[in-house]
Amino acid sequence: MSPSDALLIVAPYTEGTPYAEEAEELRDGAAKLGYRVEPIEIADQGDWRHNICKKPRAIFDRMTRHDGPVLVLDADCRVLRPLDELFVLGRGVDVMIKHREHYAFSALFNVGVIYFAATRNARMLAQTWAERTERHGIFHRFPDQATFSEAMLDGQHRLRFRPLPRKFHVEPRDADQVPEEERCIFHYKSSRAQRNARQAESTVPTPIDSGLEAEFVCLCVERKKDFKKLALSGAEGAASDFVEYAHRFGIDRVWMFRLPVAPDDMPALDHCRVFAWRSLMNRFSEDKPLVVADLNVLMLQSPRPWCELLSQADIVVAWDRRLSTALPSPRCIAMRTNHIVGEQLLPRLERCYVERRQSEADPSLALAQALGHVLAEPLPRLRVATLPADTIVPMSQATSQSQMILTDTEMSLTGEQSWHRPMFLRHPQEATRRQRSIEPSA
Image (cartoon, rainbow, N blue to C red; front, side, top):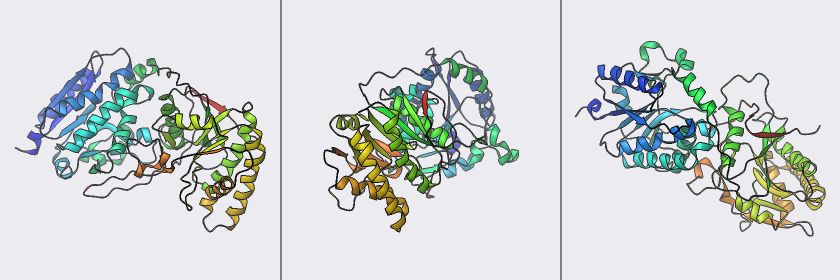
């Protein structure tokens, strides 16, 4: 059997939408090149997000009934040229998909074109994708995209991955980067207007009250006025991700605290963290429990452990105190707005941080070192609680059980060609959806 005979192209679409005609055109065009396309009709659920949440399950179900590789295409894609090179690239890997560096976690992979090999790992990935979309997809702007990133995260240490070459997923906005004679699959986005209209009509569900009494604060970098890139890239996308993932766990309100620093200026960001913590003491009522995190900290599990500890403590940090060399993480911290934290602990922390920043060889560790120092010798009556150090982990160390991940790091994916691309937040802009704003004082 030739590779083209073994390949099945599937194109999910929602009944009663322009995508039905698009899927038929895709099938007819691909047939001329010898490829078999199977449109998959998804019953209209009456809401755009709920419709999208049915897509991964439909794909997984079709994969379980096919012995060869499966190429998933959005219905408004077109196969323009033979895909022989795709078969060669697909040898020895489980999945190929377009990776978009500098994008937020929920948009790190573009699910408009996905190549699933006929492997157990590929099917496990598709199954995890379907399960996570069914549980949490409705809380996201792009339900299938956010949950695909999570599925990749879950399987990162076993998946053999290769980024899909650009010519196999060309979109109108990047058409000038791929000559017309080289394009193999073009994603026309011809139904974008209809999709956007349906997306606008769809509403994000109100989170079920989780009983968490804490206020959640996201520390954001200052927005650049000349920002013109996509909403899912850089700091804007990360801030939106923070809010969307918080919604999963019943957190209906997230406060945004803007820091006047560039996102790649870590020393300034550390200094402003201390300023933000002190400022928050005056922004909320007395003895208010707060959970304060960087915008590139993503909650994959409920933050209930933070809130439960904070009910009996003044400050909570992720820190393995059993190891003398371990440092607490300043990326997420919970605290109460009382006098012992605001008037005693935080001023002492700021002084210690300034001293260490000037004396330590690695200034990037100064804040964590200062935090560990002042908490190791706590003030009288200060109640300190700790969570395991792996409560907050880089993406490369994350598993399906991880509570919080750092999205400014990279996944650990393998393949015939190693792939390690760090993702940095570079293009900050205000994320407007369902956020409260707190402007730092001068």
